[in-house]
Image (cartoon, rainbow, N blue to C red):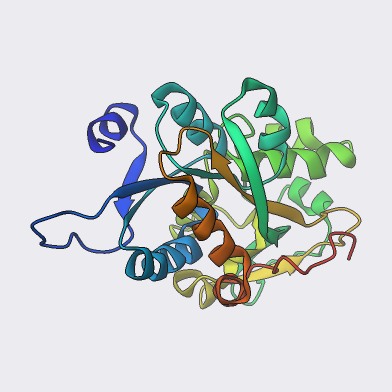
Length: 261
């Protein structure tokens, strides 16, 4: 049901587990997941599949692109954007239901291992003329939106955009560019620096929480779900300690975090 639609719109659709060879396939459920959260959500989905006897598919992409896909298709069970502003922005459109907080992410600066350019924990460093800087695109994903908010607070967003080598659509593309040595510095969700493929290559420079406030990760029930009981059970698992331990493993702050700290 989901495959042809996602091929048409160009989002990545993956199974949380390999396709099982069974005479009677398990029911399918669909999660629209911001790219930064795909790793923990895939692991949680695998647990849920075994217990609930369903198959969880994950459509991953930029948060705004994912929302528009859910709205256009009328399909799916959950939506997990990279920051809460997407719920605020789209709540009045009628497809988003109840939600649970499943953790927090926070903007940080990311540099090559060892911080060879001696970048300081200050977003004004993005304006240094000796650094190649890349930034998230605010029109496509949460990392760009959050970067814009931090830099707007400091009054430097237009200057940083102008000074950037290029804008990337999401957190994964930012890290890919860093791995290819296309930049010396980026702003990204801090959790991305703790992913296995990144932790040995990059350092995370944390920012003052008064500048970069932790952003709640809201797992939102879609009103298009055809199995509300299972959908809510998945939300409960993700928000409970078992799910939260998985989020912490991937560098996220858990849902007991005070966003003011």
